[in-house]
Length: 328
Image (cartoon, rainbow, N blue to C red):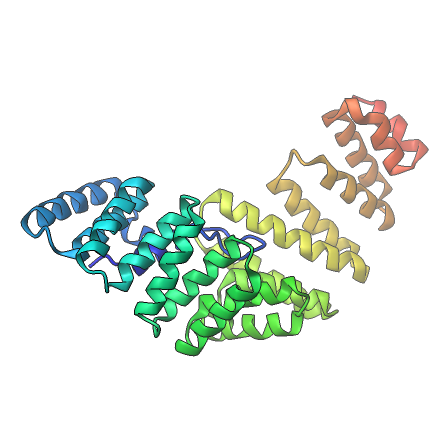
């Protein structure tokens, strides 16, 4: 049976971590509809419509259809089915949890808050509802209450990896990097290859001055992500770029310019139009004694952005750069 929790988790499985963790408007059904998703959704709708016609007072059927409608981003219709489920069975916490998520995505924050509270009142031992209310509170800027919800979810379910992860993100935002690392460690103890946790743990370790450990986390994250074939190119590019950028900062501070230049090579390959990265690589090459390579980068930048040539040359602060920049 397709439940509210399944749908909410489904959207989340396709989300990209942000500064607040994963996207709060995500849901778990996508994994059920890989490949011929439209055909599967159409078939599921047909079966549910027939089942509801035969059993019009079955609240769970309306919840399932609401979940499917949310996958199609038909949120108005999803709310109508969730309303009907709540009317049929006012004690069904899942109906309120699903409707809360749909209302949050629809920016009805007051209604979403009310529904999450009602779902918890009806089912206070459900870790999943506390987790999703925590995500909603992050979305609406209620960071302390969100952390409390993640903590409660962990108390109810010590294996709630997503709650550890989200709480770790909030701790890092408060500069509690030790606490954040503890939470990321809990995630990685359960899912050793969870790439976002590796990446964020690396950032936290960097803040604490544990440079080598941070580099190890970034390197492992990059290796793992490259091996995950079902991530889209866009998501992989965004994540890799962030990791290379963080790792480059560490290597430059350690004086490992060759490694930092190598990371810039990767970043430039991922985002070739970002000429500022070429400027940074040129500066590193110069510091590392590769003046020829630096001049080649300067020439490339001036070719890419001739309107900014004077600015570029001033940034590089090298009289020879102007001569190179003139060769086009």
